[in-house]
Amino acid sequence: MPIAHHILQLRDSLPPGVSLLAISKYQPIEAIQEAYAAGQRMFGENHIIEMATKAAALPTDIEWHFTGHVQTNKIKYMASFVHMIHAVDSFRLLREINKHAAKHNRIIDCLLQIHIAQEETKYGLTIEECKTLLADEPWRELGHIRIAGLMAMGSHTDNMEQVRAEFRQIKQLFNELKSAYFADSPSFCHISEGMTDDYPIAIEEGSTIIRIGSMIFGERPY
Ligand SMILES: *Cc1c(COP(=O)(O)O)cnc(C)c1O
Image (cartoon, rainbow, N blue to C red; front, side, top):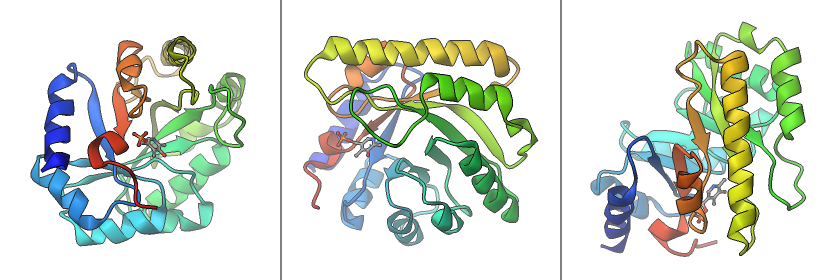
């Protein structure tokens, strides 16, 4: 039972206030069932259709988190059940998610994805873009989404001091936004960061949701 073993071992090591999100992308249903049997209820996926298919086949008390890039035309396939969308990086996307959540009379938790890593990517807001979004856009008018915090990926590097500095920047931004916009919103409380290779540092620097895939399930079967 290596999956159950890894889940229990990880969960035992987490300080209070940090949740374990099991990233089950590309993993078969049986692997998720094994984690479920070990008590795991939070699962993360990177493809909307794959997540919807798995959600339909698995117990309904699972909390599904979408951690991949959001394709606008597929939001409708997850709007009825998704618990949290981690990688929101534009006001346009917030508005689209809001529209679909409204159809199901739901409020969907969203995290703003911040790009801090050294790698080039077209995804994620810079710190400045994030501040501009919150200052300039009418996000408070969107009644069917809730901005619940920030999400980030550390650089893919062996230089752990670099990764630590990045996570520290995220915490600083989180604090700044909390006092500027969310002082009265207890639901703005999450920092989603830390994967198999860097989660201990992420926890030290303020992560509240670690996203762990290969450490739980082993290598992904692509
Ligand atoms: C795949 C993935 C993870 C998990 O990565 P591991 O290194 O296998 O723990 C976490 N977050 C996101 C966004 C991912 O795509």
